[in-house]
Image: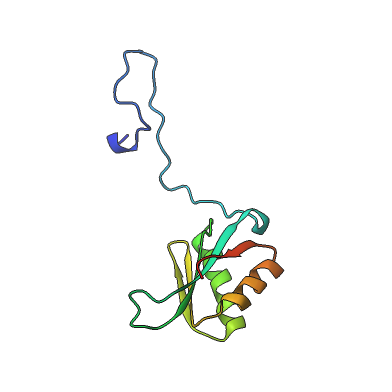
Length: 113
């Protein structure tokens, strides 16, 4: 067992002690839409003055994030990307995305402005 996989214990004097390994490869299970706390905001920083709608707070697998991003981009008719628990949709679609998320069962709120 590698030392860096041990979960918090450095040394034990107990002769029957066995290390518990931290499972680093465990994928985060996707929460159901009713338990998601999504935030929708407009962002134009570091984007050359272009506006993007930023959806943050998604908890789940990357495949589910990509599926939600594809749904939102298709309904808004714009491009975008999804990574690191964030979805970017090109353009100002805050109201439309908020309505779509609430309609599909997500808890979502608009933040900032």
